[in-house]
Length: 408
Ligand SMILES: O=C(O)CCC(=O)C(=O)O
Ligand SMILES: [Fe+2]
Image 1 (cartoon, protein in one colour):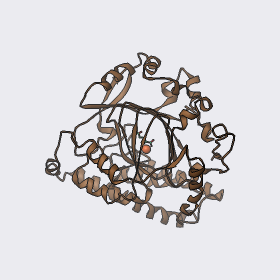
Image 2 (tube, protein in one colour):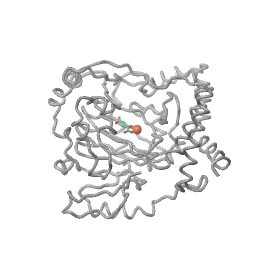
Image 3 (tube, rainbow, N blue to C red):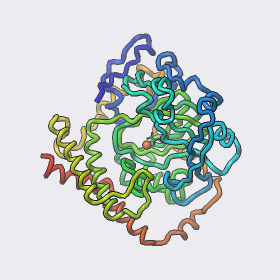
Image 4 (cartoon, rainbow, N blue to C red):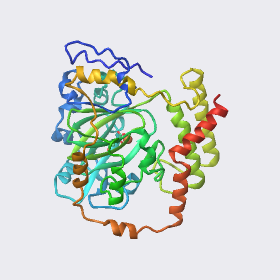
């Protein structure tokens, strides 16, 4: 793992923040307000200098795959696997996105290195040096969406995440890792390293609104504006929605104990491959055999053993020491560098009101119709089985048993 020393030397009168690894140590999301704007000369990201017109020229007549979703009310979340793809040039997208439309479009989760293969200079320009992170565009992904484009609420199992908002605004709802059981977690559709919430945050039903309301004291909400940067620690659930035509860039930062998450993921893979192979899964997940699942488990075990050999693993299943008490250092940072660093505020009643009314005028399925459509198919039973066996609490328990027997 790279040593993170978050330097503000070039930003704040050459006063370096004396806080090694401050970013990666935070258990709270951190907002760096307007930081890209202040540091344009420092970070020199080419993309900061391009307006939409220039982006249209840069992508030229390249046809880009946009997921198409509906702005109307739907019963289920609009999963990635369920949304069709249309191919548009950037200019076609911009024209369509500006029109009044019942669809949203999302060129999402796109590896910058693949879309700028012929422009290594552009790939290099995405440097995260301001945060003393040794990454560039070859490690980063890009997200371009119209108003309403969104990513269903989920938890990424590996690493932590840093995201830069370049154009437009994006709403982030954030739930701490200890909310997992209340999020109605699911592994269908199956995607390695993504645990989805079954709640539809885009157009929630009254039942879903009630469920979200029970977590209100723990939820955080932030609307990222151009030049803002958000740090999301490992395990935080997030729902993300474009409020305008927007562009953001992010990088996932690996963590030393990702091997634990990988072992847990290999257990989920075993469950999906044995009882859930008929369930929907992401396009890049071919069916694999039981033998392959066991091979994956063995590999992850080996990785955990190596890490333990390096004495980086904590004692078996001992809860990670919460550094809430260390939060004073973040509070200090927040106070000292008030211009940039903010902990993300808790969701207020006014935010909740805004969140609930934002998309409530959308037509489509009504709650009662949604209820009527619920019938118990064989697939529903299998899905429930997979979700039960792969529930984060169950997987953690199985992980602990395995750890005590095989990782001593
Ligand atoms: O921006 C989005 O739509 C989702 C981003 C996300 O899930 C992530 O960066 O982990
Ligand atoms: Fe994510």
